[in-house]
Image (cartoon, rainbow, N blue to C red; front, side, top):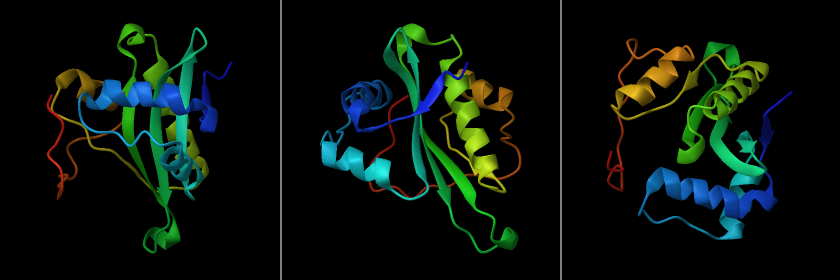
Length: 148
């Protein structure tokens, strides 16, 4: 049984609730137009998992075209979040596994993500096979990072 699904415009309100869990008091563009733009963006999928009929985990997967690696695309995972009351039930792992499979199905040569220094979160990603010892991630930001 597949726990995951691609989100649709009907998921707007539930997705916003999860985004608020992720970013706290930071501003979120709540417009349905912005959400629809994200859903329609080529190579982008919002993948979610439901628990008790409610969207309870989600992420954004971007599969990006490329020239190197014989033109194979690469993938970027962003905004991974699981609702606090259902953490530890496998929903985050389910959306991550679905995203990884989608990237491999698209012949991506690598999947990237950034995470904070929280050891639990890093442990979650390393348990899925992500390595933190090969490259160093850098960012140039126009807004401050989220508080831990």
